[in-house]
Length: 230
Length: 61
Image (cartoon, rainbow over the protein chains, first blue to last red):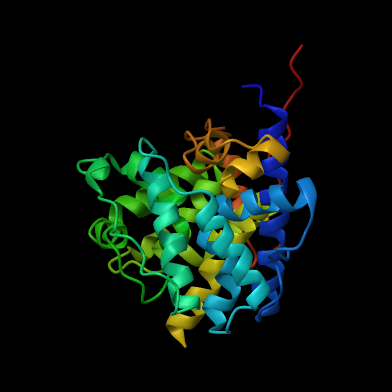
């Protein structure tokens, strides 16, 4: 399907931002990955939209390393949350993505407003394991250690389905979905050992890791897996 | 003027562009020969070497 110029530029900006997050995650610490709020013109506006698309993961390095966010980064993140609220008819993933950003904002800055009520998970009621895995992969920023929400509880009730979805995504060479599902699997209880998650994540990185959005999820999964073991 | 309206004016980015990016359809699957996939999956521990290249195939036509 042909994409508009705007869509292409937005995707490129999201990839740039994701690359910065990956670098920070690989470095094991926090780096400034969100452009400062003073960035002028189209570049700054595009970056703001990119922060909204990458969602809560834009602040992931600091969140995982428990490092207070840079005030300038936080200002951009807050601006993205405020500038792009979900529309009334927005898809569930859009609403959940925005909710995740609001939650992250609250974690990073307790003086921020309370996140709104959680959206519902009715659209996943009775979802096939294929649909469930796809939707969870899109919502991978919700997969965080110690962070509870309706989506994570639903995922925790279907570890075998997510494992099946991970294997399917690998076989379909859908590396983004595989990486997102792999991130969820690092957190879910009851994942069968036969999945071979560590090797699977290595394989996903090897085959799809040149895509920053894949690399981000793989790095996040590894960081969370290491943390869970430590 | 709201912030999002200003952003749209400058960049042409619509809320629909962002929402489309946040609600992507599942990517088309690209299946390959399972033997090739199995060979690629044979990662050699820490070195991550591929132990077995895919079997050469005759060119079509």
